[in-house]
Image (cartoon, rainbow over all chains, first blue to last red; front, top):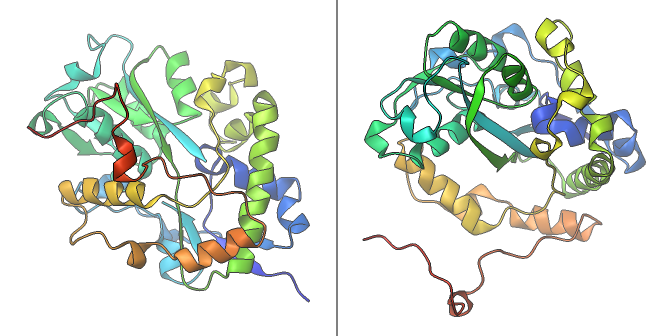
Length: 74
Length: 235
């Protein structure tokens, strides 16, 4: 049976060091998960400088919104 | 993952404590966890009406550049930018830690989530066993940024690199976060645990070999009144 696939939004070390190490050291494969990290498109990137406190313009969750990722770190 | 966020000021700043940032402009990346951590650090040091913030780019390097240009009194950054800021002579006036929380859509299965938490749990154990080896990841995140590439693993304060094995989010923590955000006008409505947390999937995932869930920090009400302790109360 094929391993389940899951796609997440990109992470950096500060918020996803565990994910990056697990990917690089084959731990997702060892646990039977085909983990993929989505690549943002230009339209996914919004500057937080354009938002307000009550109406922020973060890029987090944008790939999930358009169905390109199933999880993101908030 | 546990994220460290620090409020930093410019090298020549006369500000040494977070209280001194009252009515001073602080640049935050609104909408990101680090930005909210910055807001919480300010809120803990002054009346809410004295908290003065402005929107800033999500890239910590851009915020540090603005700080050094004198565009605001302080900003909040995470690693590797805390280390970069310190090497540039900036000072930390407050620091805090917060959990990164995964937000999943309904396509995530218990099987996939269980495998995800098993793999990241193993990674957390490896990293904690040799943090110095793995801080190179913070450097390689920014291959084209000279001030990050100038860092060496020994430059990092490992006390700021913290990881915890993944586990279910306790309801009281989720409720507090919701109500805190609602208090700032970021969310509307009452917190509804069932609407925010899929406990069934979570339970199935952990039953499928995930790590042992941590016990709730808040005991039942009858057990809270421990002799010799006091709890905060609204006056």
